[in-house]
Image 1 (cartoon, rainbow, N blue to C red):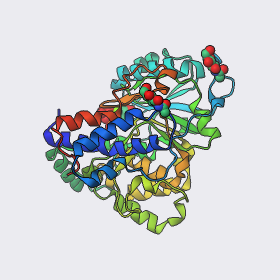
Image 2 (image 1 turned 120 degrees about the vertical axis):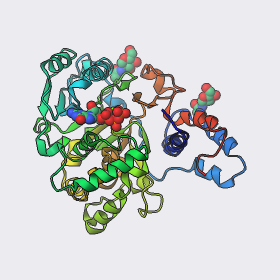
Image 3 (image 1 turned 90 degrees about the horizontal axis):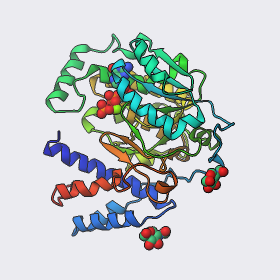
Image 4 (image 1 turned 90 degrees about the vertical axis):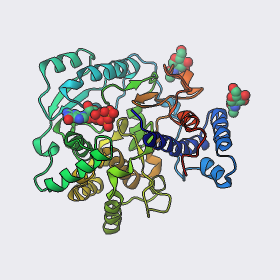
Length: 395
Ligand SMILES: Nc1nc2c(ncn2[C@@H]2O[C@H](COP(=O)(O)OP(=O)(O)OP(=O)(O)O)[C@@H](O)[C@H]2O)c(=O)[nH]1
Ligand SMILES: *[C@@H]1O[C@H](CO)[C@@H](O)[C@H](O)[C@H]1NC(C)=O
Ligand SMILES: *[C@@H]1O[C@H](CO)[C@@H](O)[C@H](O)[C@H]1NC(C)=O
Ligand SMILES: [Mg+2]
């Protein structure tokens, strides 16, 4: 699958993500020994360059993204009595049935058979009876199936199709992942600006996004929705990495214009430091991997994000480029939520190809995680560097 160039990019992606993970671990709790040894190894690889050391051990700016879950959220009740107003939401095609079954079985086994949160499935085409029957049989919870309104999904008429086609063709020639796909762009725009407006979600406040063919490795012994609600968190993630630059060529220009014209929407103590290494001048392409999200729907429904999304949408970049919902959500969360309202679910073992987050000791044992603790997103860096023969992926 990988050309050499792509490999270098992945290595670079992993290296940058290592910066976060090191910073997350830096202020936290637990045993940092393994991370220390990784730092040492990388410094070994990078040897002679003095600056490299600082770069690698750099603390990724301010935020207290990582906070231990307070004991009061843990429960052994078979059917916990207190619940949040929350839903597990999944966008899927009928053809995703098997992948959804695999994801949802684990969601039930590791978490929801006890907590009993409802599900909403959304699709721009009607779900088949087979899909509805198969999915509903996996849970005792309420499961609802929604049709996405036409205008929330398809490419708007005002998009210049000739320009969009030309840019898609360029991306295909340059091997940009999903570069030629219009449905993928529909999906990214829908997840960025519309999923939270679907009527089936109106009655809910918190959501957990579930995709087909993901893995949940650990037992969830507490209610993450109650944690979000009571601790006033707005956005939760498990993996963060940099976006492919070609897909977001002018995204940061649009963001900067919005911030300049509407400074009143940007909150104090935001997470700009996560997005930019130069005070907002340029985007470092860091984003939370949005195939896993536990979030507050009101973050997206609020005036700030709605105006922000409309502004981005008016630029046409979802179609002229290939703006992803991951950078768009991440930038939204980082600007319209305080940095202490963004949470790293370190205890949640999670895999979406080709990366996984596997909790380290003692979280690994406490949550009976069924993943190899050595196979963890930040650790794959070592393999990438080794494959590159010790060449420094940053030069
Ligand atoms: N209804 C519908 N759902 C879609 C469509 N395309 C993608 N999805 C869903 O949108 C989510 C993201 O799509 P994915 O194809 O998983 O995209 P990705 O995660 O970037 O890439 P891979 O998982 O590596 O393919 C998943 O929940 C998909 O099931 C579509 O055309 N229609
Ligand atoms: C971390 O683990 C190592 C090896 O298991 C152990 O020697 C060390 O004392 C631990 N450190 C902390 C802070 O728990
Ligand atoms: C749940 O059960 C485990 C094992 O018996 C125990 O260690 C833990 O303290 C219990 N937790 C709560 C919140 O009661
Ligand atoms: Mg996916």
